[in-house]
Image (tube, rainbow, N blue to C red; front, side, top):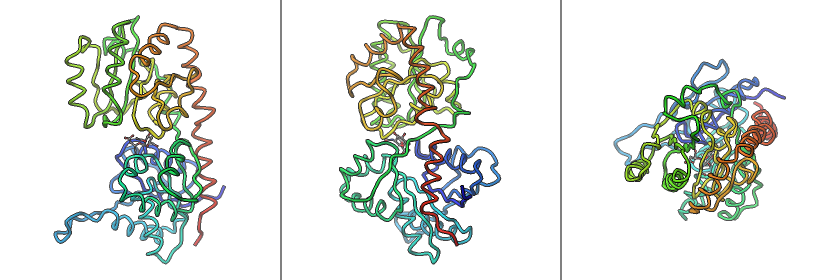
Length: 377
Ligand code: GMT
C-alpha cells in the first residue's frame, strides 16, 4: 500500500461524523500515512501526540463589513493552501455541504490537483436535504467529488431519493477502535451508581436533539421499570435536556434515571450496561450502537435509516417501530428476564463488531478508495 498524504475535513466537535473522521485519521496515521486535519478547531478526539498527524486551523475572521463570518471560503482557501504546501494526494471530506463544495472550490482555485473523497453521514442529507435550497449544493458537492461514500445503504438510498444523480455512492460502514471500545472491569461503578445485584442497566447516549426521541427512551424505561428493577443512564446533553429532566421529575421512578451529562469514557459506562437504546426518528447509522456492541451491549433501535443495518433483529438486539413504546418495553423485559438469550445477544454483539464492522477492514476500504483517486505531484 502506497503511503499517502491525506487531508481530512470534518466538523471537529459535531457528534458521530467528527468522531469517525478523527478515529479514521488516527488509524490511517498508525498505518503510516501522513494525515493533515484541516478544521476550524482541534478535533476533540485528537487527544495525544501522533508524529504523522498535523492540524491546520481554519481561521474564520469576523470582518465588520460582512454580516456573516465566511467559514466556507476560509476553509476552501485553507484546503488549497495546505494541499499545495504539503503536497497532499487526496482530501477526505465529511459532509457534502459545505465540505465537499469547499474542497471542489479549493481544487478549482488551486493550480495543484488532488483527489476528493466525500463521506455522507446523514445530517446533511436527511436534515438539510429537507430544505429545498440546499438540494442543488448537495448535488454539486456529490458530483464534484471523485468518490462518494455513505455510512449505510439506507443513507445511500435516501440520497438517491433526494438527489437526481448518476454518481455512484458506495456504502462504507462506520467502525470503532476496538482497543478503546471493549468490556472493562468497572464493577465498582455499579456500586457508585447504586445499581443493586439483581438490577439491570439501560443506557442511552446522544446529543439530545429532537430527532433522538429521548422522551420515547424515558417512557420505554418507565414501562420496563414498572415490571422489573432497572436503572437508566442518560449520557450526553443538548436542546431536549430541559424537557427530559421535567419528564423524569414528574415520574414515580425519578431516582432510577441518572443524568450523567457529557462523558469522555463511555466504554466504562457501556461495560456496566445491559442494553443500549436508540429510538431516533432519523439515524443514518448510529455509531453509539456500535460503540456499545463492541463493549458487549446489544441494542434496541427503531426501524429507521441505517439502524437495522447495525442491529441484527433477534441476534444483536431488537428493531422496533418508532413510537412503539409498549412494543419496545415488552421486548426489553423479555430479553432482560431471559439470562441465556441476553448472554447470547451480548456475545453476538461483540462478534458482529469483528465480523461486519472491524476497524481494520473498514480502514482498508477507505485506503483502497484513496489509492484510486490520489494525485501525485
Ligand atoms: O446524530 C447526530 O446528531 C450527529 C451526526 C453527525 O453529523 O455527526 O451523526 C451522523 O453521523 C454519524 C456518524 O456517521 C452517524 O452514526 C449518525 O447516525 C448520523 N446522524 C444522523 O443521521 C441523524
